[in-house]
Length: 498
Image (cartoon, rainbow, N blue to C red):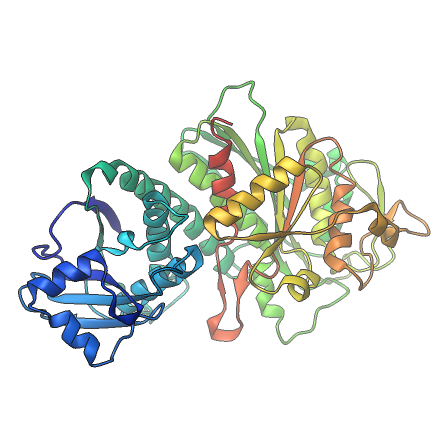
């Protein structure tokens, strides 16, 4: 898919389709007004018929509008002119690409950048259009045999720039938006891949391939023998029931000076989670291919960092394992020693994500990180608390928490701050070990974060629980959302020059 900025008359543009906005109550945007005047009031006559009212996300394709070079004009409802905000704009962009895909249009001129949003500039609107159009065109067809899925005709999308002084901003938005979309696609492809393909070994292979594609990247993979030598018995306790060996994957982006402290992203990479001996209910167990979405997200984010050549140092660390029941699997009641020296009583083998993350979080202390964010589909409890709209964020540092929140508000990949109070730590008390791996039913997402906090005291850290936002639906509608790649990328972009 090619995106460019274009300074051209919409009336004379020879694209196969024009995308034009329309406010409620028949209020036309500047471009819609031009088209209406050139077509001798054709748009106004259409509006009087009531087929489109301008409500947010409404669409109507007009064919062969008089005196307009493009054979199609796609009208998109923008809602009330005084209340269009960022969230509505995302819906508008998604509606536009959805309607466009129902045609066989191969090239389009998008004029939605002129939408009035009081607190968003042209760069923001242009980047969101690029990202949303990429998202709308995403297909995961690599596992199909005889069927190629829904065809994609669109090849070229140009963003209208009515004022040449804004051309630089739009071009930058296109570059940034395409890079973020590339990282998001990488994350979606990894997450959507079935567990018989996407094993810890497969992720490690993909990480090595990524490093070969970018000069700024290097990949190191720790095998189980090396992890055992380091004392990562907590991580290894998760993989010991599986024939698939665990991997600790370290991807470095060297964009800054050698002495600059890196920003470290840590991803939970459980490529399939049966729950182990504490077996999950079978009806929806197939969804557990998505238990590595944290790993996919940090993989996608560092892909974008390399694509943009961000002038900072970033390290993505993926703790990858498969959680299976077998005669060698961990049992409820087992006690394991972590790399930190602390011991954990495993009360529930389905609380395995924190067991792999705690050793990874100890390991990264060697990098003397500037900041650390771990990303994990960690708890079902967070879905009960926040649903599918916001990811939970926990942090031991106010500035890191604020920057994550700002990145979330910027990208609309939003988070909600949760408590990390010592009051909850007592729920992790163990009779025989330093802690248990679960704090019980109450405040499950909070106690999981409190568990991780015990391994992150030497650096500035935040934890994102993305169990409710990383994938959606069930059955034939299941799909990875790619969240929170956009948030992580914005967070890293905001570090440049800070």
